[in-house]
Structure formats: structure tokens, C-alpha cells
Image (cartoon, rainbow, N blue to C red; front, side):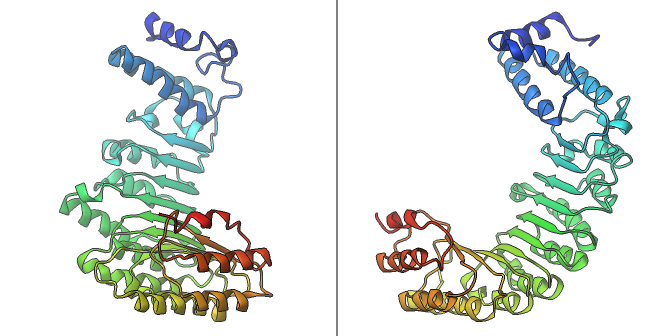
Amino acid sequence: MSQLVEDCLRIIFTELKYVPNSLYSCILFFFRNFTSSYQRYGLELIKESIYTNDYQKKYNILEQEYYKLFINNCKNITDFRWCTTLPLYQYPGASTCFSQLRTLYITDNQSWISDKLLGMSQICQDIENLELLNCDRDTPGLIKFIDNQKNLQSLHLNNYVSCEMGEQDIQEWNKYLLISSFPKLQYLETQYLSPHGVCRLIENSQNIKEINTRNHFLGEEAIYNIKLFKVIAKNCPNIESLSVNTYLKNLGGVKEIILNCNKLRELDISINFEDDAGNNHEREIICDEILNYLLNYSPRNFDEFSFNERWRFSVNNLKNFFEGWRGRKPIEFNPRFDKCDHFTQKHIEIVQKYYDEGVIDIDTRFLYSANNY
């Protein structure tokens, strides 16, 4: 704490003066029960007060001293949320602190910490769960860090800011996705990454049990919306849970997964908005057909189906679906909407009837306001 000035300590004590117990367990003085959650919440609290008082320079000193103290006193941590641009791998004790890391969340823009990730990749090589928010640039350090993980079981790649990426950034990141392979990967979640890259990642990894992916599928990328279903059906025979968005015209691709993946237990499908989605009767035919496939071909352990407001079921087919489901494990028939004008009172009454009879395993009372405008 050699560089920590009196004003910084004064701010901390002022913030905590009405919570005496907190002072006795303050992260700056007592490390016996220190956990990584303190690292995040403590810094956010201190940072807020410092910004309020326009003490940016003092905050920078405090942040450096904080991480020195954290790394020097915490041994073999297994869970860490990275929210700093400091070169943590250079700090004394970094190897002992991070070498057993199993779960890592990176919330900063990776382009700001690429060189830090490159250094950290020499220490952390056994990550099992990795979550990256805003992986929005060609970052050699990030690519090297991911590539060093041979025991990766859960991967979450978020790219909400893809619209801000330059063409070169997209191409370089896609090149990496096309050659990535994680043979132990069990869970994959992607948000607005290259559809082609996601397909190749699934092909190269294989045997993923849970997939949660969202994409725009704009322009030429729309073809990968269809390909995605084929890739999953072929390369993930043991998949148990799938959450995906698609267009109505591509919904038939789900059939291949239902037919080929005999361990499928959960299916969550959101239909994208389209200006040319056809008339209501055509929509009903397509959606009813998926229900029929679930009834006739889904595995016996399948028990959860979720859908958004752009699905449209005929009343008779919905009734036939639940009647045919009788005798199987109760299904969680899960509408993901608050309002939907074509989920009528008749639909609601059918759902309620089969819930009362134990065919459906989810409370349906909220549906009574679904078509009230």
C-alpha cells in the first residue's frame, strides 16, 4: 500500500462508515476469506466514489495497489472476472495466483488488453469455462489465449458490437473461427458471430451437448441459417439442448435435428421477423408440422419446448399435440412472450386444460393476458 495516499483511504472509510462490520472485513486489510467477487464489487464501489470526486489519478494508483495486494495474497484462485487493462501477468505472484484458473470472464474490450492476454496465456492453460464479451477486433493475444486452452468445456463468445467492426477485423477473426477445434467442448454460446464461423466451430469441435446461438443472418449469410441445422444434426448426435433463432422459411431444418439427435431434451426456437413471411394459414401449416415432428419423432426424454410470439399454431393441431403427448413425461410448453394476438383464448384454454391434467409441466396462468390489448 506504499503508494496509496491518505485521500484514497479517507474515501473508503467514508463510504463504509455506516457499515462497521464491513470495515473489519475490508478487502484492503483482511484476506483470509478473500474471493474474486470482492475484486469486482469492491473496485466498482471505490471507482464510483472516486469518479464522483474527480480523482482519476488516485483511482489509477488505487487500482494498481489493489491488484498487487490481490495477486500477492490470493493463491490458486479458480474463478476470475477480468475488468482491468493492467498487465496482471507481470505482477509478483501472478503464476501462483492464476495457474489453477478454471473459469474466466473477460468484460473489457479485448483489443485493449491483447498483449496482456498474450502474457497470461503462458500462465493459464487449463481454462474450462471461458466467457468473452465484445470480442470485436482482431486480437492476436486473445486468439493465442484461446488456442492454448486444451481443456475448454464451455465457451461463450459475445459480439454485440459487430456492426462497428471493420472488414479486416471481421476477416481475421473469422479465419480463426474456421480453424478452431475444442474436442472437450460441451457448451457453446455465440451472439452475433459470423454464421459461417459458428458452423465450422461446431464441425471442428463435434459432440457439443448444449448450443445457444443468435445471429442476424443478413444477406448472403442467410444460407448459413439452413446449414446450421444440418451441421448440428450431423456433428452433434448427443446434443441435449438447442436454443436458436431462424426464419420461418428455414424452420423445416429443425426436423433433421429432431430425427437425428436422440438425446435432445430441450428446444428453444425464436422465429425472426420477416416482411414476406406469407399469410397466416401458411405460417400455421409450417409451425404445426414442427409440433407433429416433436410428437412423433422426438426422443422419449424430450420435455421442454420454448417459442416466441411469431409462432402460430392452429387450435385443432395444438389440441392433438397435447392429446398425443399424454402418457409421456410432462412437457414444459413455454411461450416466451407477454402479448400475442394470435395466441387466442381458445389456445389458452387448451393449454390450461392439459396443464390441469398433468400433460404440461409449467404454470400457464400468465397466458390469460397474452391476447388482451
